[in-house]
Image: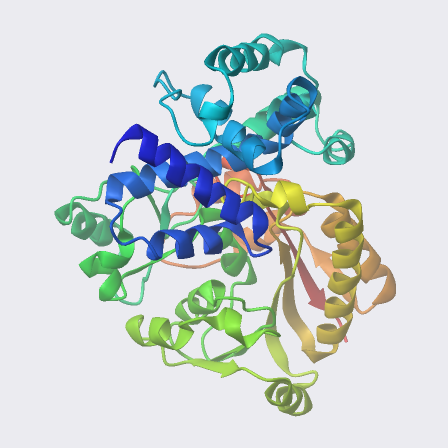
Length: 437
């Protein structure tokens, strides 16, 4: 496909994303699926163009508004695509498209030059395209240099990471099997089950995936289940299961023994979890796919559950590498709303835990309000609960794997706090709690 056509498709796809309230990945997936004539390289170009624009749009919109205030929204979208691509590549992105020919070429290049020349004088928020209120909030938690590194990492592409299904294969053997399918990987730094791919690959089409030997899961996400450390022949509740990635991991850690109950308030989010369970050879998971099924579970197991995972709904601010469109949707009001929801969920599920049981509260957020502050408030309301430092918890984990790096990373840490610029994971938080009576 010609560059002109690729640019036009990129602008069209980006316009669809901006006009749809759904997450960008869902909108882009539908756009590409409806255009079966696009080849793999075309899809890659369009996807990278759209995601590049999403990462920079807050800054580029401001620049365009100041420089060419008369532009309409659709033309603004075309310019955002042009500017984000031209700043990342030496390609001639002035190949005429129906949108860009409305602006003289000199004006386009002047705009591009203006963007580059003013980069050093921009504020941190402008340079990395983050809302000002986010920057001010994070400055209380990070030094200026660390915040700059965090923003740069959140604007970069996330690696493709796999979790080994240790019920069926070892990580080393999976690595060799994947190599036979022309997929090179390296061991993860922290999770004993993680393999990091050298680049993007169609994992779903591999024989390894079809045989249930692996799942796509961020390395940080894998550590959440590991911290819960559920034992075989026990009762575990995954209270906010979503697509079930951690559900599968918990069931695997329990060696397919005992029972993992998975509940999701919005059952559509489970997706094809039953097929995933079957492919993974897991038989110790029960899906709670309605409020009635959850109610029956609560009546039966109140005060009797051994392990509870609350992977709470959150702003998702730690996943901006994968979901750059979240920048636009993040607001102080949305943060406050989600905090209230998190508090309610913690209070609702705490009574289910038995004395001596373990609860892990986790988010994929980098905001203190959703993390440490939430745990501190919970402990002030529930005196029968206490915090277990993750540095001690990780010492107790007994699995057939070397956890030296993980133990070193969590040495003297009270909470699990992971960041892309430090750990090459999404931003994750977890606290381990236990109940006394």
